[in-house]
Image 1: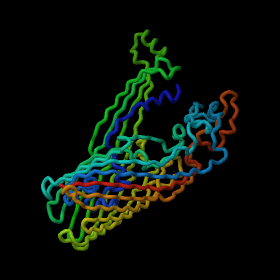
Image 2 (image 1 turned 60 degrees about the vertical axis):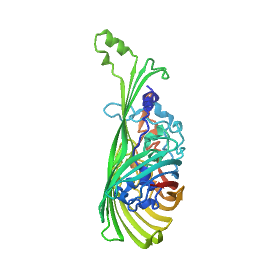
Image 3 (image 1 turned 180 degrees about the vertical axis):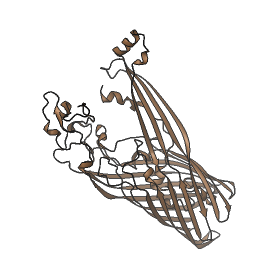
Image 4 (image 1 turned 90 degrees about the vertical axis):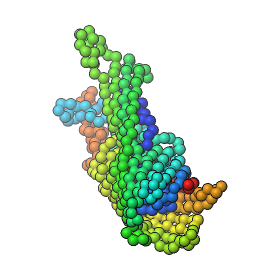
Length: 494
């Protein structure tokens, strides 16, 4: 039975639904004056996500906007050594040293020259456009504020593109892909939050972000296994939504000083699937003639699990210090801000639902910034450094990720439109993915063509000696790149 027959489970297409907010964790608040410090300073479009305790400081408003993001990942592949190729002779191979009397090859790679795609042929770069709406309302002035946010990719509601990070990717793209980019950014984001400032020096808040759990089942009947383009198919998809909480707190013990803390619980979008394939076979006829249960002929069954947009536990501590004076829309104020974000990447799940092994490292991401305000203008500047959680890729896995340096600038101007107070904002951000190289340890790479003999004459196949592998990351790879983002927003105050 050919592999393409069993992969008819690809028919299980999960409807788009809101899930993880990887976009925000990567780029901060795309419509805030201080995009990379949105957990500490108010006024952003998604304050309700980053720190709902800041909502009482946000002005009552409705806003909409757009943001364009492009990333350019450069992945270079090391030159494969002589003898690493898998020849066509693997089709006639049996293990020279059978395990438990079974001489069949357990893993069946393609001959290197027959892989579906050229090694590294898939372009890891992409660009996306997002549309957004946001709102802040004070249900009870100061004591109860509400924030809502919705982000939608302009080209698709949601994308899910799983891939393997080891030698199994030879059967598909035969390329390496950035782990924390790609389809993690192609998803809509929906959430809301409440914030309260019961005391002059204390505010608290809590919010929810929507995620999904999908179950997909396909039943396939093949009347003739030799004609795989003829099949009767039923596909069933069920999508359930749930909401993942996050929390924030703001302390202002003295007038110029603000202290903040946030906690975001882990969330992701999961797809559990199953496909069953039944053939019209002589076994069915014999079972019926014998009077036995027709279900004695068991269908071929496959199960799979995908995890998209996985974001583990995140916690932050921040501080801001305000200076200057502003009276009756006059004067000048400045605010210096810094915060530290802890992300527990050791709990990360990749697109196949696996926890990477050896485990990823937890990271600390520092950010600093300044905000300048002179009515009706405001300007914010941020800098941030994000270390990669991914360890050196010396074994079979090829998780592609880099340390990142980020700089962002935001500008906002207030004005009246038909006597309605409004504001318009522009935001720019640039991130540099620092170059990183990995060298494989051959002792950690599975031999895809172990020592074998020819099934016809029993003679040893010389090409099977040593290490052969189609792992696209072997014998090593390097990666670097850039990310640029530009956003524009329009806000109406009421």
